[in-house]
Amino acid sequence: MTQKTRSRSRAARLALLIAVPALALTTACGGAAESSDEGVASVSKAPSTEQTKDGADSSKGGAPKGKSAFYDAQMKYVQCMRKEVDKDFPDPKLSGYLDWAKVDELAENTGKGEISKGGKDGVCTAKMNDAAKLEPRRDTQKEYESMLAHAKCMRANGVSKFTNPQLQDGSVLPGGDPKPGSPEISPDSPTYKQARQACKDKLLDGLDGMQ
View 1 (cartoon, helix red, strand yellow):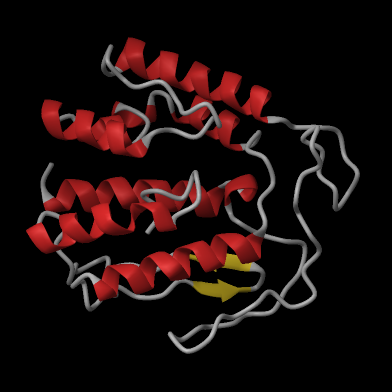
View 2: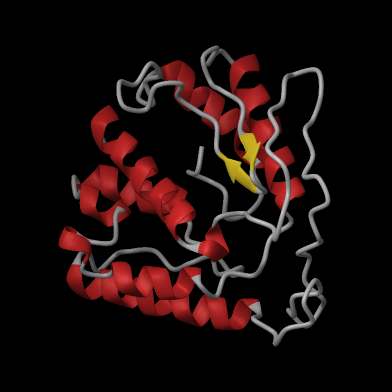
């Protein structure tokens, strides 16, 4: 996969993350904040969005939206992608999240950039959005700290321009290339690939490919 295709792939995931509330890593309220390597920002006065063991949103006492429903919805997206784009589109992880490493590998091996973007002309995007709405609620602070640890690791492994994530209005804005429109980081470089491999475990499940 070329650098341009990889950039589009990550941009598509980021657009989905921002567009769908359940994927926006948001809380009901919270102030904007930025971090440096010396400290970790925190979400001010943000209610917990941790789930109870049965999958219910503990901050609101709402009806359960467990991983099972999320996984089933994600499988409908996978089935659409297999029918419309490529028969080898990978199964989601047991958690329900897509295995982006396998998705990107398939896109690279086949040359089908649309594999990472919901299919040509967004043929399966509606099902991708349906699955996103069933994603279990997240703990924004933990998501932010995970992305921050990943960003620091990327810089420590040679990708010096990799930026930190930011907390803004209770949402997490992923870090990465400082100029996505005119990339300053090459995802095809050996240094970048080695750093990604070394730092992959820093990201919580479902965040791979977001920064």
